[in-house]
Image (cartoon, rainbow, N blue to C red; front, top):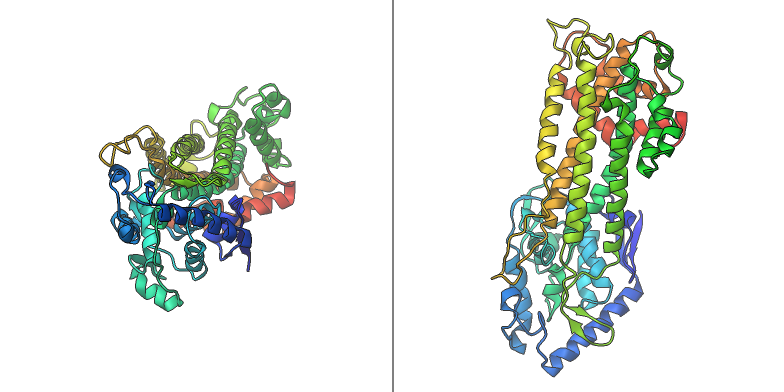
Length: 512
């Protein structure tokens, strides 16, 4: 079993994925314990001196000027968690909550939050015991970070609130802690605030989305190449010298992928010198690398933002090594919200151009001698007609989801928090856009496979043969209409999984 060790310098994106989607265990490096103990001693000194410090001896948000007596400061922290655990809606997926919890451990372990080591250790214990808090989907504005979602996590540490059961049901946290042999935590001054102030939820979702987008953008090159092959398109627009003269890095990678995917194909050989074909293919074919490549470059930008956030201190207030405790705005999610919105736009366009290729593949007037809707007996049979309807509907939804959340600020907390990031909403809808992109590429894969089957006896490229092998068992041979939804689900699984890409790379080498 893999182990993720949380260092004072934080964790890596791979660490987050291993904990969120795998069964990796989490341990705190001894140096993180020392860093937390040092910052805690500073908070204890402030308490002893009676100095007014936000979140230590005062209320929160609009109540920042309300002094809290020493004998009520532990009560203050518990009240904070209970009142801020105010989310509603369906529970967030287990992987999102686990990513968020690990990132909160990371934040505390940086030694700038002033908490006792036992607080971070309690979060680690939840992760290692596979106790996942029930975190409702609505509640965060990405303002002081993800206050409500993190409060729902912190509430479980107190033995209160809810957790996700084995079947996704909601269970009392106290029962789950008892079953795991864990005891509730009693918070001290500053610790409740330190558990909920930060960008961990939106960063966790962004890191998961980065991983998914990287895979899907490569699969978009695969499905584009298969569709182009099935439509008897040209490989010439993907020659490397044509992309060297417009040196966007993602474009060059995507073009190189598509060009390689189209080699060693009897289907391509059959028309390479056929002057009857159009001099230029349609944009959805010829410009595939320009769109998918721009999405790759967008992803590189988003990855850089996430990498910077992974080494950032996002708590408030922060405990500095020289003993100062200063308020900061580092919890504001604008960098992550902007990045998520940008990536959602890019992913939506990758899906939109894929749908245009599907429409072309099905249209008897444009698909270069394939039957209408890829049915050998069109008329009685509708073939993939309605699969394209589904794709069109998803494209329309993605266009709505691509509208940025990060420009939609609403003031809260008596105008103390008068500009919020909406970063939680931006990253949450980005995940929906990527899930929709999976479906769109699945429709393109299915249509391309049908097209290549109908080009028989011509042998497709190695990529085409791999796709036929991956989906052919479910798809069967072209013929009378069948119940299409299970076939589309099978295509989704092929697009989302690693097997098709691995099979192709065994034949032609690694894809970019």
